Image (cartoon, rainbow, N blue to C red; front, side):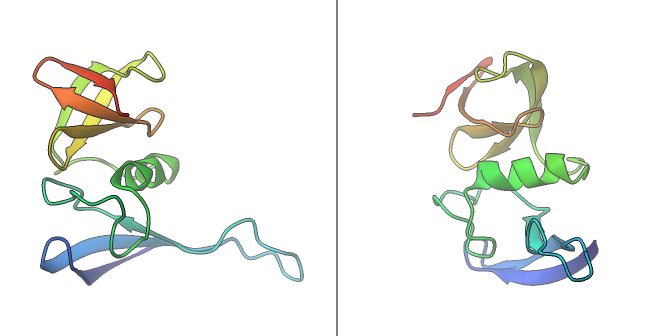
Length: 118
């Protein structure tokens, strides 16, 4: 993986991203392409898609979890995930939205608990 700064149109500033490298299987098809993972998911992530990674913010959290990247520096709370039922850190982003760091599922965050996101 390599880190890089890129311009984010949603934040209107440079943000840090990680780029995961696709596995190299000489002569074989790869399972996935390189993935862009935003390390600055936050309050300004209000759109349905990240302008850089073309994924929903909760999918970015899923990429963070899948690649074993830390959530340090992100706004998080500990709560029971309404999707997987585990008590886990929830990464807060946008207006009242959160994503579970255990399963990556989106949720609506209100003070005190998370609810399924419609």
